[in-house]
Length: 325
Image (cartoon, rainbow, N blue to C red; front, side, top):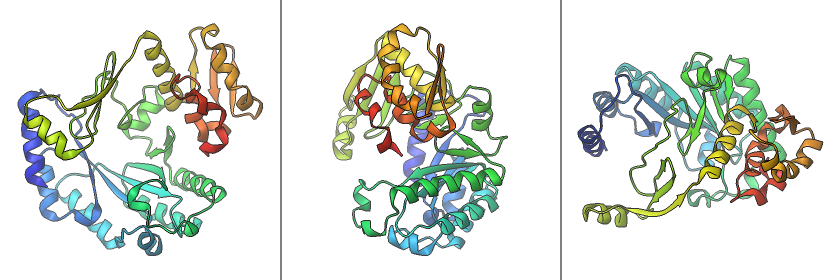
């Protein structure tokens, strides 16, 4: 793993200039964080690590095929901190089989005790291939999933965390929290960020790049991707060009996802979109105040559907707000 990372970092440094103090993040499985790996990551200049925790209950871990005792997670954190890599974030999940409110409460207390900075909350998916072995009878109901998501937010708020966007929680001093408080939070294909750059280069199979006038996605098949790159050609599989209206709509969607409100430059061009949101307005999920569209606290869990009203490629889903909970 380290040899591969070294080759990638070497190639990047050979072709790009890096700002002083830039962030270099990596996602890690706590079960594979050895002392040697931690030292190697520090040497490569990694500055942030995201660890997948999901839930600390052994029954839940067994049901999803990911057993990792608490000592394993603690050891991973300790090894990373010993080499100076203390900027950590954890991924938590709800909606997992055999998961309960009590197990979620204990998971929150455990990760908070590790004094990390950032938490990302994810809902479990029943569509992923590696989860098809899960017995759906052990999965929480929709109402239980709603309760689990609410409990995580309540517990982390009690510990002093602030919610960022739809699924992140951080200490108030974290860079994402600061960006959110100052309305400078952004969102791209990698998630929430305080980076306001308009260009995102995706390297590797299936990665997506963002350019001023469109998007490009690489081929997903790894062997084919490698073969194309070795042949000295681009491995893009598909692209989408954006015009001025697309960019305007993208800005509206981003502000809704980051700030839960947006100023619409002109109401007239979006009369159809606002009409689509009428049902949500009657339910108290959104408010339309002159030129300003505001997603209420009650509607934040379905902000994706509110935003979809402004996406000409997905607006048909905007009326189905009950399915997004």
